[in-house]
View 1: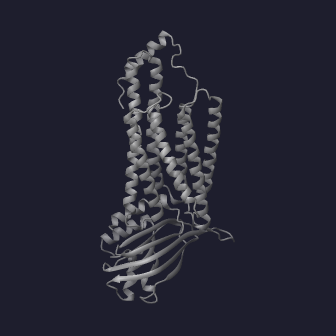
View 2 (view 1 turned 90 degrees about the horizontal axis):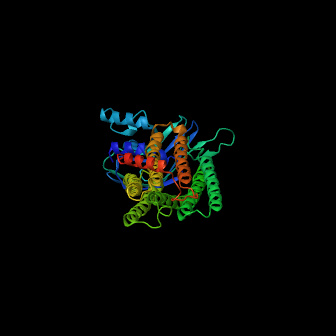
View 3 (view 1 turned 180 degrees about the vertical axis):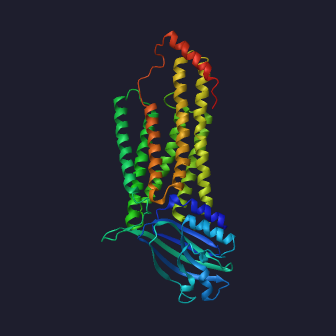
Length: 437
């Protein structure tokens, strides 16, 4: 693995800094650098490293030479400095740098036949670190099972362990708070549907389902993070989280497509091209969720981790682009209908609504995919929770906007409009022809 690839991995680890207890299997691996998890330590950080079934193959050196094989902790800035030192030929191995924190090197093994090693490392310098394994002996292949547990000890007499990275320790409460908000919105939506039950469409029930799945997803994520925080393991809540995350993702993208087509409230059917969009989006969401599970569960030590990360990003971008097409088609259809059916005012209202929705969908996609990632990258590790809050607030705003704009209401498309309003709308529609998406 090249040093550039490792740098890219380190930059993409911010969202994975949950640091539950992880067991990694390395088999006959000759990679010079193998990154494990990233974690934000306080001044009372601890790393438990348990190595079992250790074996060395290939050209086995003597014990002192194994000082170039082992584990170390380093920050992103430190890794950039290490790369510069290697490029300037100041050092030929990352373990030889004075800016990394050596955890355990294999020259400390009692002998070459040792198969099990248990080691506790205390980190007193607060910062965000990545646990990395370095093998600077090109002919040496390493096989081992690695159990790594990184945590911070809470201040006070309790000395309780917190397995969530510093800056993410508040996530269980935040996710639970947002789940309560979404359950409240679902209750409010049910009340609105009951009061306006004579004017509701199928899309409104679908919107209720999306909100409930989002609330359940957040609740499971809150429990997942809470168990990891206290025990280092999700205790099965991660399975429920993945299930609801998959259902939430599929239904949300489907909802955007259905609203974009005007299904249920403008027309009772989907055209063939609109069905094809759904046939593309839903399978891609399946692939995206499989990629997300692999990314979360395997960790960056896996040789295919980067590939799965790229697959997830690519599929997500394709889905985000695909859901925009039905909205564009609806806008064009409304513009054409306005020229023929003589209902300029009504069509102008619909056209304005779909235009606003198109802009909001683009803003939502841009913010949650680009801005939130930028916040994760540039924000201090102590405040990584802010990027989660920003993303959830943007999602909440999008849900509220969608519900408000497409709420059930008594609307008669043939209501009486005076001639002046109709003429003004017709003139506005002529100007609208200059608008291009």
